[in-house]
Image 1: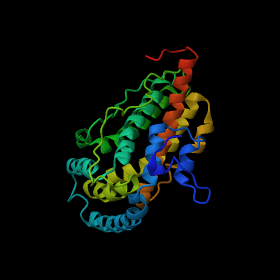
Image 2: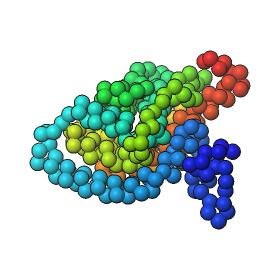
Image 3: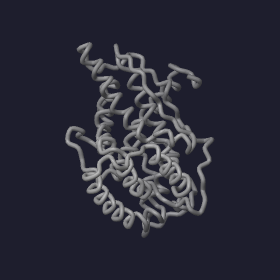
Length: 299
């Protein structure tokens, strides 16, 4: 058993069980182990327990006033460049190592899932634009905005080809899993200063008003609505694999009936979890190809 003191892995009290220890040990949901332990430590952090309730209320109040401001002055403050510099600075100086790991992993995981879909549909050719940041400077290149744009552009390009060719999604007989990587962050040393304390949810709640303020209304709403495309991406993958079982792991659904932007922070965490579980399913398929001798470990 992992002896992480923050999760009290070394001891267990029947009268006071640690819920995050239970979630860590539970194997019902497929997920990368490093991601899982980071998420459980994040859930168990003092920031999550004591700061998040106050930050959530503050964020909602600020978002309301920004919403009113944007109604009257929609184009007065618009700068993706300033936004991403703020995000890069905030992540580097105030966000915990675990939360930074989860955020950086998400771009890699999402890029690999879209690469998998693009390469495994019969009679379809789509060029993707992978986003795989390895340092905070990469964030300054409009990383978060590009992530949302890539997702919508991918859906539009894929379905345009399907309509033009009058075909549906059908997976290739021999699946290409070469783009799936087990772990991407053994070489990244995220900062651990005394100021790096914010958990994932608190960081997202604090950053969301900046997102709303510095992006156009179209960009902000599109970013919020993109979270519900989890269902769309999961359906594409299910059709390729002819295996719909993992659809039960998706919580952000019904993209044609968008949610309010005020719940974006919580849904963003669910979005990250959905991507991680789908990614792990595909990684496990690649590992099975190794064990069956279909591909070699260098593939």
